[in-house]
Length: 219
Image (cartoon, rainbow, N blue to C red; front, side, top):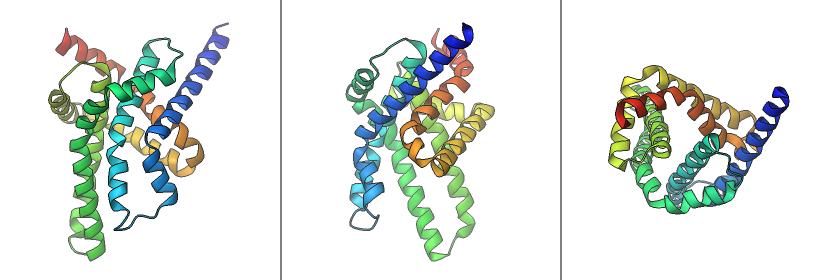
C-alpha cells in the first residue's frame, strides 16, 4: 500500500511539474520562439533582451507554484501559476533586474574578450562572477517563494547565504550543472520539466536551511 501511494504521489508530481513547465513556456513564449526560430544578431538583439527580461516573472511563478505544490494539495496548478505570475509580476521583475543586468554585462564582456583575444586571463573571473550571481538568484527565488520580505532584503540575504553557506551553494552549483546536462542531452523533455524540476530539487535539498532561517530570523 505504501509503495502504491508513493507511486501515485510521484506520478502526480511528475504531471504537476509538466503542467508548470507548459505554463512557463506560455509566459516565456517570446524567448522560446526567438531561440527556436530567430538567429541572434544586431537587429534581433533587442527582442532577445526583452524576452530575457520577461524570464523574471516566469521564474518567480515557477518557484512559487512548486513551493505551494510541495506544501499543499492543490489540483488547480494552472490557476495557481498564473495567479502568481500576474500578482507577482512587478515584484519578481524587480527581483530579477539586478541579476539580469549583471548577466548582460558579464556575457558582453565574455563575448568581446573571446572575440578580441585580449584579456583572456579575465575569463575565469568573469565566469566565476556569473556562477555566483546565478547561485544568489536561486537563493533569492527560494526566499521570495517562502517568506514575505522586501526585495532589497531578499537580495541582501541571498548574498549573505551565498557567502555563509558554502556547502549549500555547492549544492546549487551541482543542480545548475545537472540542469545544463538535462537540457544538453534531453532537450525535448527538458523544455517541459527542466526548470520546474530544478525548482523542486532546490527546495528539497535546501529545506533544512529554510527551517533554520525561519527559526532564527523569522520567529
